[in-house]
Amino acid sequence: MNRTRLVPLIVATALFMENTDSTVIATSLPAIAESLNEDPVALKLAVTSYLVSLAIFVPVSGWMADRYGSRTVFRAALAVFMAGSLACAAAGSLGGFVAARFVQGMGGAMMVPVGRLVLLRSIPKSEIVAALAYLTIPAMVGPVVGPPLGGFITTYFDWRWIFFINIPIGLLGIVLSSLYFENIREPERPPLDVAGFVLLGVGLAALMLGLATGGRHLLPIELSVACAVIGTLAIIAYVRHARRTPHPLVRLDLLRIPTFRASVLGGSLFRIGVGAIPFLLPLMLQIGFGLNPLQSGLLTFVSAAGALFMKALAARILRTFGFRAVLTVNAFIAAAFIAASGLFTPGTPHWIIMMVLLVGGCFRSLQFTSLNAIAYADVSSRPDSRMLRWWTAAAAAKIAGRRYRTLAYAEWPLVPQLLAAAADLLGSAPVHGTSAGGVSSLRSTACSVA
Image 1 (cartoon, rainbow, N blue to C red):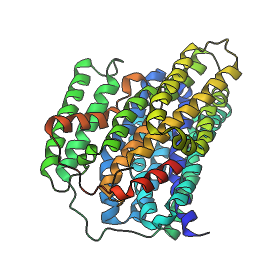
Image 2: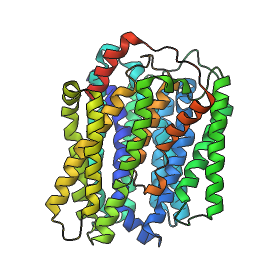
Image 3: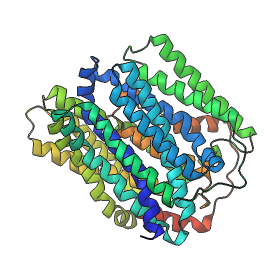
């Protein structure tokens, strides 16, 4: 098998594992809550801990790959994610489960961005479209098989077994990356922005914790408000710091690019609306309607199937109608299908539920594809690791949107908006490195594989 196929398929093991993990857990949440003697909604703390871990370690992932080598970091990230999975399976309390999910987040924060960095630096530019296609399709299979697989294991075995799914996949990824990845390092790399890492890590973690715990009495309201305020102040301090630092951890000047800014801000708003569905829908079907996990999974997986189907049509739709029309009209259509889920009752025929979820998944996928396609249309094609942190943040926001959260903690997609707003208030440096000549090629590449 040639390198154009092999490298993206190896990276896809990480994406497949993470996407499968998220959808498997979503279907099993009521059973996990019952086993731990907790309110199902209280398990959002376990979800939040994963996102807090992402928020802390995603920004430093590119620097670590440059410093220690992409193969080394990728293998270590897979090992950490597997260790977190085993800890989740052994958890006997909410606190233990939350801690184990934080460890999983450490691995997830490293393996996805580093894997993409390996791909972009290993594959010739002329073959990048084909390589990204090989990366995308296996990764999208995870959300399709995850709900019924998680429902089957939880219904007929035990929820703890769902975390063992990650072990053989992770081991396969470690073996293949050891054999076929080059240990790519940047010979000339900027120093790590330690102050920026601390400010951004504290800011994002405190802000998400404050928003996640507000309104559910999981923490005293005073503490939740204090966390949110501290997080906001730390993010503002990071923006001020980034303006004065020659090599900031995250390049805020990219927000000056109109297409990138539109994708980050508009995409964040859309993800806030979409984010609660994968969390609330299984709870409604199982706790509200009395279905078992397998029945719930066999209903909800069609949404991911619809998203997979739309990937084959998205590029043609965008070429026919254009980005502005698709993003505007499709946002209303996708929102209507989200609202339709609130009209389901225990007496609603299952085929109607499946059709609404299937078609709604198609339109949500089209919106995400369009947003992802315009994000890097006007960004320099040089695969700088600091630039790729924004790409990873967008992907993490999408994962966070899938990761079963209530409206009370749709906070991760708000982070890019807060950064952008703070940059507006404080001012930001002009963009450097924008390549107008590369716009059309990047757009076509993104449309083909987003």
